[in-house]
Length: 179
Image (tube, rainbow, N blue to C red; front, side, top):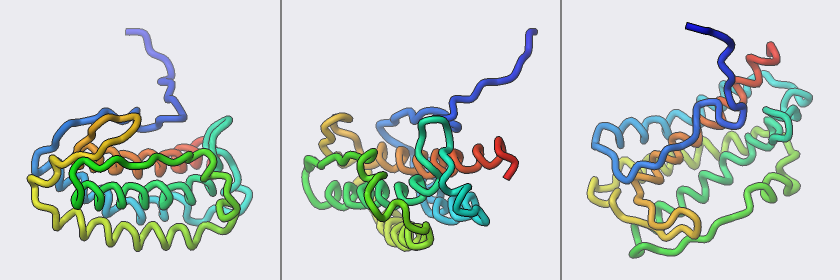
């Protein structure tokens, strides 16, 4: 058997997201716990980094660690709102946002502490919501211009992956850089 170094796509260190139409109760509970753990996991990933390290792209042509730290609460605020709309309206049409442009707004060059705090508070509220949703309500859908009609289960799996995905951007950069 021929061997060689395994090439990992730095854009997707944990692999690309694979949509799932629904989750079992156990899978759903596990994804909720991943969302609950995401802020602390990300905070550990960036702990002790200096400004030069925070301003290092996680890959060639990619966002800096600082931009990723500000992106996570931006993205997850949108996710939280999508869940709220999905629970309170019948297949609501949601608006997308230009995340690449959001990653260039003025606050994304600021220290990351307030974004880490926002992520923590947001996830506390979001997880409280998620743990209170009736299982049948996870089948509710939203209308997304690019994704069609994903269920709340699909969104739950996506955003659980999303937190792990961006945390891995930082941890793999740290490993490659010896930080």
